[in-house]
Amino acid sequence: MLKGKGYFIWKVEESAPDAAILAARAMQAGLGHVLIKIADGDGNYPLDDPDGSKERFTRDAIQALKSAGILVWGWTFVYGGKPEPEPQAKKFAARAAELGLNGFCVSSVNLPGRKWSAASARRFMETLVSEIKSLGIPEPTLALSSSASITSNPDFPFDAFMEFCQMSIPQVYWIAKDGGDPVRLLQDTYQQYSSRYPTKAMVPSGAAFGGDQTVAGEKFFWEARTDQITMFLNQAMAMSFPAVNFWSWQSAWEKRHLWDTIAAYPFQASVSTQPSPVSATATQTISLADTADDDGVAVINVGEPGYFEGVYDNTGGELVSFVHEGNRCTWTNGDLTRSTAYAQWVPRITKSGEYMIEAWIPGINATTRRARYHVHGVVGQDSTVVVELSQINYSDEYARLGIFQLDGNHQFSGMVSLNNLVKGDTTANPQVAFGPVRWRRIERTGGVQPGFADGFDSPVGTEAERRTSKMPPGDWYDANPYLNLYELGYHTGSDFNLPHDKDRGAPAYAIADGTVTYSGQAFNRDGRPSGFGTLVVIRHDPYMTPDGQIINAYSRYGHMKDLVVSKGDRVRRGDKVGTIWNHGTRAHHLHFDISLTGILQTQEGHWPGSKRHEVEKHYVDPIQFIKKYRPPF
Image (tube, rainbow, N blue to C red; front, side, top):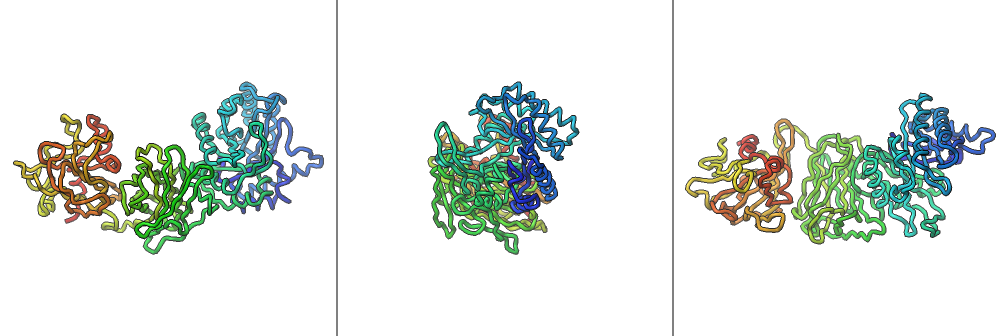
């Protein structure tokens, strides 16, 4: 399969003075593959070669590129109508065999008077596959290069060609009188090809050319811009394409600014899934910031080396800078349908290991509930790890994106990206904020690591009672155990009581260190007050089990009054969070539950009711959990 950056070469003999220089240019540009035209219809390519010099150059170029470690494929343009499909297929297979190639790219579109039928396209592909087999070409890979839009070309037999191909290489040329939108076109192209051919790989081919164009009968001059190429490359990398290439080598080299932009871009395959472009307004290439200190902590602030931001052309996107609590940030309005602005934080991770990654969320201009952070280059992941964060639940604090295994030999390992696409956000006028991002290396040397919880304690009982192994402690008992089925459904946790209503007015305590994510009246998703009354939710610091697993827990304390903590407060294990009461219920008691999925981050009043599988999915038995992970006393 194709990997990395590449080019289509039309006339290889015009691409460089000699084969050695051509290979050197490819290496200097960081190319991973090149596609060279070797046939045209039922004829050889290059054309007009009476002395054979063009053919010799072609062979020398292929050998030089292979020797440089660059994958070489052959491509051909084939025609509907005449000549017949069979001789065109036989010629392409024969040329590949002569030149020692096993990558086949079939390029075609319907031309006036030379349109393909599904039957003729199938005949071509069947013949090509048969010829490849009969010639003994090992491990062949077939691809179709055609229009970016399937729906706009209903008469072209995409299905007949793609039935025999392992890959599509759609021509994502953003030609438009207003300049064009490479990101939107790439997204639309992927949507069409992936839905039509979900099991086939896709490698987008971008535009690195310019000249007179005619679209819908209107003539105008158009040329790809360097910022558009950067946006296209970054979007391709963000969507985890294994490779990307451009039409064409010759035109890009002639317009050297286009060549230089592509050469400078460090495209890495399979590092992300959503758009995370490099700045189109100020920086055209990614540079890495050597920000990690001796303690394994790296922070990239907005506006400093390693930070990139920008807006897409023709989208109306805007980034507004501000300083809050001493931290420089930017914000933009969220968009429910597309991304119009973006940011990247690119650290230089030089030591492999586990890292905690955190994003600082300002207390202003951060109201979205659907900020989707993408962590790139995580070991064992073919695409980015997506972390959805409700920024509105944080205030002037670092929010943990998680703990990730990073590779010090991967230059983009640990890169974080965020855009303003907030699909599904129900917040009125959601705002997305971009602030500092922090990486902290975790050394498993025994003991409790900084930033980690030391265990989980009982939420009720005196200090002496909570230091015993009994759970619940003292005279406390569980009046409504986990998964008990009663009139309101399956219970998500425990109802802690004391005999004779002695729990009325008793304090409730934080079970571990963490940050308060909610404090106040709870509401259901439909906006009605929840039966929990007033409650507190705490997102606890991660806990590392003895076998090295990481637990990220949330705890919820319901039916309380006199809440003594507010959203955003840091709490320590044993801090009082409120007073046990009967808000939202009849009998005084503390409803207490623990979630390991993060559902309480966005739905403080979450209640699955009769859906037992939802309870088991989001909640654990709090008594057994605390018994298992008690802190050392």
